[in-house]
Each structure stands twice: as C-alpha cells, then as structure tokens.
Amino acid sequence: MLIVQEAGGYITTIDGAKDKLPYADNVLAANPKIHAQLLKLLNEKE
Image (cartoon, rainbow, N blue to C red; front, side, top):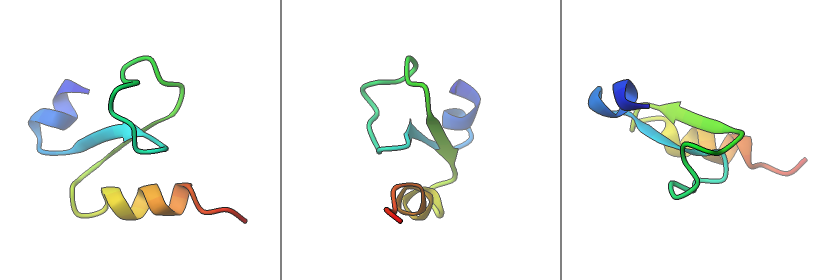
C-alpha cells in the first residue's frame, strides 16, 4: 500500500471506503485518473 500511495495512487476497498484498510478482503489500487471509473465499474449491478 505504501508504494502505491508514495507513487500518487489511491487505495480503497472496492466500495470506496478507506477506513477498512488494510484489513479489507477486496482492495482497489489505481492511479487518480482511473480510480473513480474503476470503482464505478466494480460496483455496477447487473
């Protein structure tokens, strides 16, 4: 997690929470440009 943060990336759970880290089962790590888009994609209901 530290490497991603130091590189300017965002880390959250797949539901967008930061307070559950580092104990979450599902984590999303991405650069700031695509993090919100990935969250939306991962949380779309079929």
